[in-house]
Image (cartoon, rainbow, N blue to C red; front, side, top):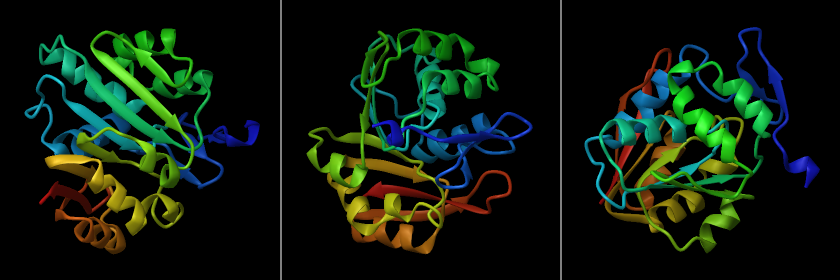
Length: 221
């Protein structure tokens, strides 16, 4: 399994870049604000938060998306657990996660609690029930018995990591989405939008974050 760990290069401003996909793990401008714009606002969160809410994600990476939404869950006054399931083929070592997340001191109260307990797999943090399913999502998602109220589609760029954006996988995403559940992603690639539409989502192209002109929002029709 050694070859299945994330392989990284760090930029001068301490942003991790995947050696496999030649793509940064988060925005070179402001990763936290991009997460809020794309994945939270893109799924109408925190307005939709409710007891038992379940988020699923393609691409766990540094854990930034999870930490951002968990912080908003707690700040909104929620005391019951948020469920968060992420599918990750190349998990990052905890030390690398800590190094990357140090760029976001605003999230330190949550990242410190997470990193203190994280050993991979599942983690119960009281107001967060986290599961990271390791392996190729094209296989692992089929065996998942859950259904998400909101999806964060955050694989590396479709041009560099097309395996995580194919029509068959978008169908699996739809099959594991609750009625009127949503999905959001930073990409507006045509084949991704078409795959989501064919899977049964109503798809909208909306303004992206920073230098990305457009992103994609989807609601299960």
